[in-house]
Length: 255
Image (tube, rainbow, N blue to C red; front, side, top):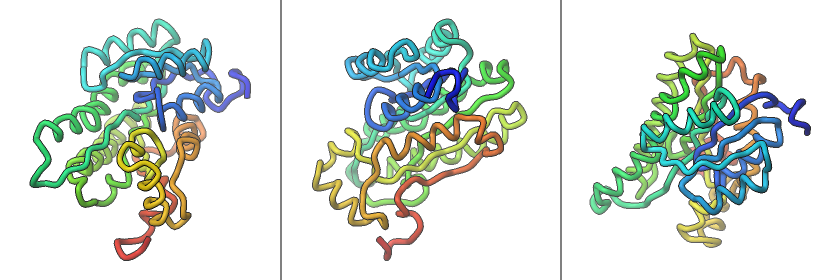
């Protein structure tokens, strides 16, 4: 696929959490489809290595999604380097387990800062760009835990339900400017974020609960981000799209 004929040809994108796992898959797919991509992440070594791999169409930026000033600088630097931002993949996220009784407030606050405040600040930072462009696409990473609850993930669920709600509100507010805002709800995806909580055992257990009988991979998720960022999705706004192998197609007695 050449940069001039790809589905994202001519578009400038920011991918948060873009250095590893799902974000790296999105970054690779965006470049392959013709976009110029800023890989925004706190993981410096991994992010720079990925940017080097992807070549002149990618740039790594060390970025804290919970810092509003950092967002201002990131968007300004992207504008100068590649042009106005037309696609924002708010992918950065962290996972923490803990019961309601035992989770420290500091852990909840960290989840809020990365998973919920980060996407809000990202949306806020790109609105002016996208208005100037005459439109744009924002894809917010929620989760299947933004569609239903799960034990020991109450705090995480709270942030992911919030992303789903913010997406709905923003889609109404920004739609008049041709800025589309949608949320993506992955199930169990094999990434460093999920593997740290149990490794192969967790992956095997997760697969046993999925109707397709396998966990997902970043390559399963990235095409959805490409579609939502492209003009092919020009009439999709305010949607919540599960990409979970069928997990949310049933209830607690399924699986």
